[in-house]
Image (cartoon, rainbow, N blue to C red; front, side):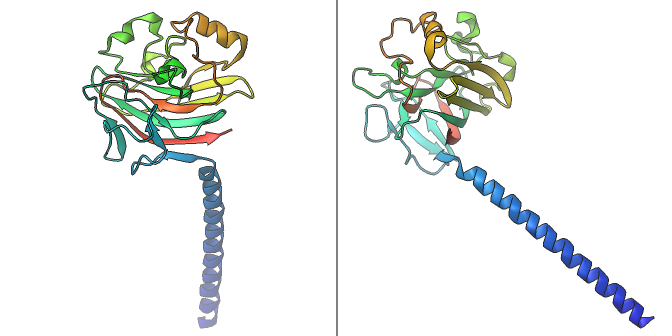
Length: 244
């Protein structure tokens, strides 16, 4: 009886060791997969510093941009035009960024910004994904909805129901791919639009917008990511980019 009991205990121990070993192997594989996925992304802002950012047409950051509770906070000052851009330029990418707007506030996320003194503002060249308080900002009620939060500003409207209100975080994922000529916007997990990023159809979209006669708007396939000073408090966090 004692011998039988010993055999059973040994079998349980061996079996347990096999299960532990298998679990450990699975964890290692899972970790490697996650590390590979993470390695595809470049962190543009992790809540601790502005190392990847600078003021537009400026060598360093504007003092109006600070860090609060792991997020970058813009607090408007007496003078406007305190837009910021990434130090690096990008062509084909996926950008993931969270934003939170103040009550009645307005801001924006730019891409393909061409930094040049001939263009005093980042929005003169960079198309924009709108950041807005849809309930209280006047822009929400004009231009057939193309000025609402999440919209490709003045070109394609984003459905209002996918946007969280002022004071709450929203996740925007923007994909720009000139190889496939496809742009894509996902708001809070819902894909809200696709559009061409160059060529005849893109040019028609620009021609039918307020940017029709803007010399440099949407002309540059490679450029900086930008965040807008529109005179209102706004927060951004967890910003990362994956080049395609």
